[in-house]
Amino acid sequence: MKFTQPLESRKLSSLLENAVSREAKLWKGYVPKKPTNQDTDISPEKRDEAVRWLRDVHSQLKLYPETLCLAIGILDRFLSAIKARPKYLRCIAISCFFLAVKTSEEDERIPSLRELASSSKCGCSPSEILRMERIVLDKLNWDLHSTTALDFLYIFHAMVLSCKSGRLNVALSGLNPSQHVALLTQQLFHCLTHNALLQVRGSLLSLGLITLELEKLCPDWLALTVDLLHKLQIDSSQLIGCRELVARCLSTHTASLPPNTVYICHPLANAPGPRDWGVLPAWHVSPAPTAPADPNTTHNRSSKSSAKRKVEHMEVDEYFDGIKRLYNEESPQEGALMCTGQTVGGGKQNAGSSPCPPLQPARET
Image (cartoon, rainbow, N blue to C red; front, side, top):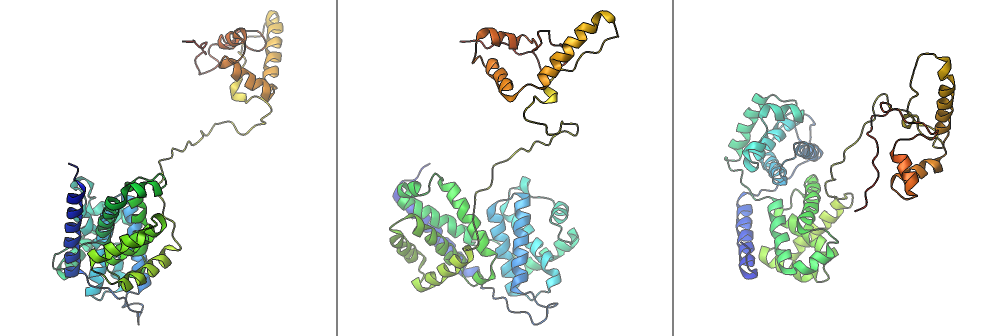
């Protein structure tokens, strides 16, 4: 069912209000401190390294983007509530990731714990991950359904499209809305790997990201930004500071769509090596038939051998002339000669000398 404009706008406003109230209830800024001891404290750089590793695991398993964003949120909430040693960081990170997978993914997409521990190379056994899971759940009061920055990004993007859909479709340069929000999602993931943005709420981070994109696409982006600020009830000075941090973070990142599948052909081990382009390749030449020595056939073999040498030294232009005859670009008589399998020397080509079926003349419809 397609909502009309007022109903769709009211529904998006309701979703935004619920997300803001949920964020205000659960969000707690994680402020990593410079470690006094490398063995007892987790540095901001170690946290960023763990998040980048989770992003690689997520990309390898091809899971939903909501799963990665929720896993990062669970990890930051846990690290803000407890002091952990760096040697346990990977175990904590993979446990948070597995909790997010079981929360966001479909049942058939959830990998087994043994498979996750093996493919991620976290260095933990399944039993250790289960024990760490229980610790994380106890510290977070078994409440994992927090509003993430990606949730706000989806809502803001839908709001902007509902207001300026026609103008944005022209400004997106051939991208549809789904592809555009996929690019913004990659930019958001890049921002989440930087500890400089840990003290920024997810709603403010998404708003700063989407307004930077609006500034490039819409001339009246400021009016849209003011409207979103009013709905989010955020001070403009906070947005200005967030936009500066996001712009600095994205200055070293280039987001792109996932590439299309590419099929790579690996050559066979006995494939012929590179040859001179001035002669016809050897695999194109039919091998000379072998027969018992007979004085009566000496002349025939010599003529076939001379024909073979003639084909081997055929120039490139003559080779392409054969292609032209194949596609009936020259006289029908020459095309018929090519299709009936006659060799250049005038003899019949051996039927078992080539794995390809004989060519048939083109039929005009």
